[in-house]
Image (cartoon, rainbow, N blue to C red):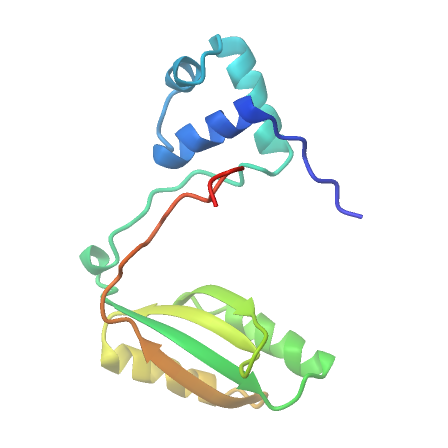
Length: 159
C-alpha cells in the first residue's frame, strides 16, 4: 500500500506559493505563509523527501525553442499482452517529442502529447511510431491554439 503524505493547510500554502513562482527563496515563502524561515525550510525539505515536491524546473516557451506544433495523439495497440504494452511503453520513454503519455479508457489505449517543430517533423515522428509492430492505429489531433497551459495543480478546496 502506498503511503500518502500528510499535508496540512500550511503545507498547502507553501505548495501554492511554489506553484505560482518556483524561484521563491525560503525567506520569501516563509513570509508568504506566515512562518519563520527555519520551520518553513524543514517543511520544504520534508515535502521534497516525501516526494510531494518532485523537482523544480523552468517552463519553456515551445515556440521560442523551435517546437511550435503540439499534437495530441491517440494510439491503439494490436493487443494488450504484457509484451506489447511493455514494448510500447519502453519505446515511448525513448521519444523526447512525447512530453506526456497516459493509458486511457475509451476507444484508444494511450493518449500522448507530442511537441515537434513542424508538420515534416511530425511526419518523421509518425513514421517511427508506425514502425512499432505493436501499434495498430494512430489518430492525430493538432492543437490550434493553447487556451490554458502550465496551470498549477488544484490544492484542497480549489476544484
